[in-house]
Image 1 (cartoon, helix red, strand yellow):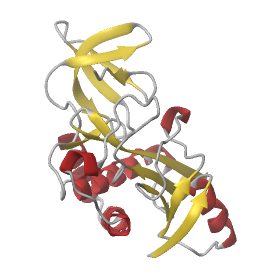
Image 2 (tube, one colour):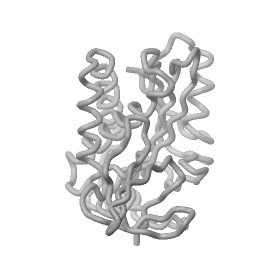
Image 3 (tube, helix red, strand yellow):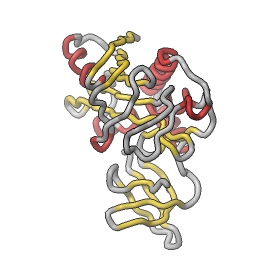
Length: 246
């Protein structure tokens, strides 16, 4: 695995995509930047990161054995690798569907996975990760950010954690390719790590706020909720429902 360190990028995903275009044989390559000027997240959000304090990285993988309609498994193995790495440093880590990483009710990590599809197969995946490590104060209007340093009161080596996260993702990816049974195992582990996986909690959709519990997540990534009182089950795609977090 090659790790490329750069001082600045508008977006590590964009940098790695351009780099990959010029190095077509490359695979399992990481790029991380001290400063990211236009980092992107899900829903088009901006990712706040104080220069040199956090992880802004992207990882190149070439799945080629994962069908386009199975791409959520990549989100699951990446989420699990990050959650498992952070759990080495603190308890209280979970995965908020579909792939945010939370410490209790606060967001410590987000990601943006961009897949290229050729003949219904994922030919290239660029996995962008923003992980809060040593930042002490957040000034954006993001509602609930937290860093590992805020949680533990310690500071950490950025490159050490990058190596752990990247190695964990690549390991999960190799396991995924080597065994068909591993797909179910990863899906089960993902379910066990879900944020608010037990009990009823508030959610919001275009119809308003309602209380429900997570029934399960489909292999496709669809979230199935069970409404409180009625027991009615509803299926939601990404952006159709959100967790209400105080």
